[in-house]
Amino acid sequence: MEYAIIKILALATLTFTASMAVTPFVTHFLYQHKMWKKKAGKEGGYGGGGTPLFNALHQDTDTGTPRMGGVVIWLGLLIALGTIILGQAMAPESLLADLAFISRSQTWIPLTAFFIGAFVGFIDDYSIVKGTGSHFADAGLSLKTRLAIVLTLAAGIGWWFYAKLGVSAISFFGITTIPLGVGFIAFFMLVVAAVYASGIIDGIDGLSGGVFLFIFAAYTGIALIQGQTDIAMFCAAIVGGLLAFLWFNIPPARFYMTETGIMALTLALATVAFLTDELVGGVGISLLPIIGGLLVVTVASNVIQVLSKKLRGGKKVFLIAPLHHHFEALGWSRPKIVMRYWIIGFVLASLGILIALVLR
Image 1 (cartoon, rainbow, N blue to C red):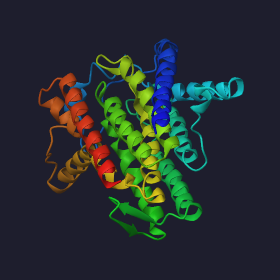
Image 2 (image 1 turned 90 degrees about the vertical axis):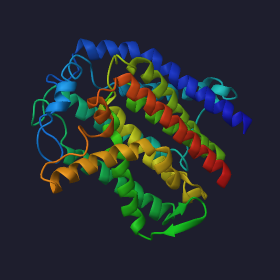
Image 3 (image 1 turned 60 degrees about the horizontal axis):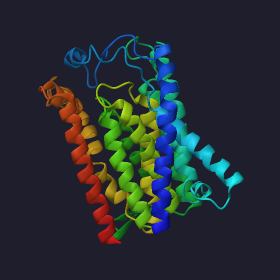
Image 4 (image 1 turned 180 degrees about the vertical axis):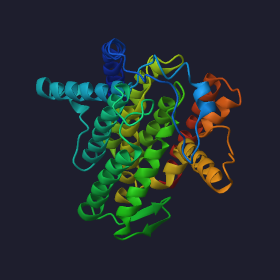
């Protein structure tokens, strides 16, 4: 295990270095081509009505700061992969060559989901900054289109788990299993859609990057505990990219992560959770609501707000949903919100790893 830890740390460092190195070029491109929204705020809100309070809070931040910062994360990972392949060719006995983590049994699926998400998200971001959608402020792929893509991908991966890998149940904290039969595919799609919905946490400088960093760090530990070294290395590589992204995204952000990063991360996370579950007698799914507790709260606050407006004649529970914007509307400074989310994220990640260790 000691050598596995060395490889994990080395890979995270390599991805961090690659992402840091490429960021100046990405930043120059984004600013040179003015890759930001041309109009601040939103034109509508979930559940009906406008978003005047949100627009007032974000009138000075939505424009002038580029979107598509998530490119730093997946481009750094691509560069790291290329470096490893080069190392295998030139020095097959070196540590660099040993950092290879692509394997059919563990990482083909999450890597595929990650890069498909990055590509689709990139298209969405590009159409937003170029104003090619139906509304000038909220241009881009429609929510229905993005959900259709996510669910189609989830259906395909869910079928692969069920038909090819023989997975038809989920673990309940390793204590027992819950058989789902062919319904596993539908459950897989539901989890993927829920995790993708949590991408709305990308709303304040440094918030989403820090939250996802702790989540993927936790799954790095869980996969390592369960003997899934390649998955642990994949998660560690993402952690390295997120660290570099955060270097430039802490307030005031040089760029925003937006869909090309969020879609990649959420699709990869959902897939990793299932790969570290019943397939290997693990606890990946059971721990997802704990480790990703901030994502759960974020989605829940949005759902509560929408239902309240629909069922209570437009009355709201929160000043703004999701929850982090409610705190913002209450007058909390953005750095305070971000730092407190990071602290909670660290605690939840630590709790998840602790539970995995106890149950192992």
